[in-house]
Amino acid sequence: MGTTSLKKIGEVAALLGTTPRTLRFYEEENLVAARRTAGGTRLYSEEDISRFRVILKLAYAGVPLSLIKELATAREKCPSGKQASHDVHTVLKSLQQQLQEQARALATLQEDLSNAAKTVEGCFECDNPPTRRGCPECPINKSLESSEILRLIWEQDLSQ
Image (cartoon, rainbow, N blue to C red):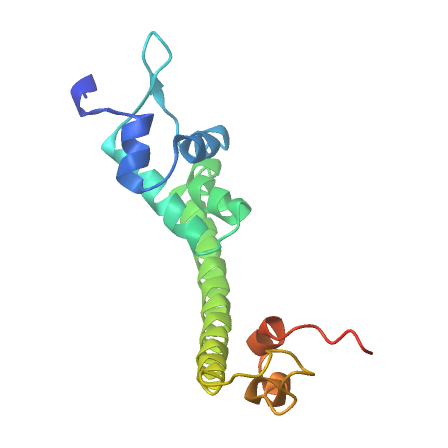
């Protein structure tokens, strides 16, 4: 592979919508190995960029670095394809379960956000101060028990 097909770290970062520091971090974690010029400039192949892309995708999805590392290194730690396939399968199933749990949590959060937005719409024309004392009949105040988001939005009740 000629160096013309290799990209510098800044180019890769721009291509992936991240920072060079983020890419160096994943390199420091031994998830991607850069080639270096005589002057020390990092160079990455299309394969390296693909690795970074999936690492960033998993990290963005909230997958812990330890699980990303486990997935990235599972095959190389095994003496046979049989063991490697079983180990990788176990990691993939664990990742799948984690993402399903996360998806359920996100769906619940999305529903709470939607309900909170509808409740807040009831205050669009309100001229009262947006406090418990200033608007004791506020729809937000009345919906606090059913929404975690509204509990965050509404001021803390320090009178208790």
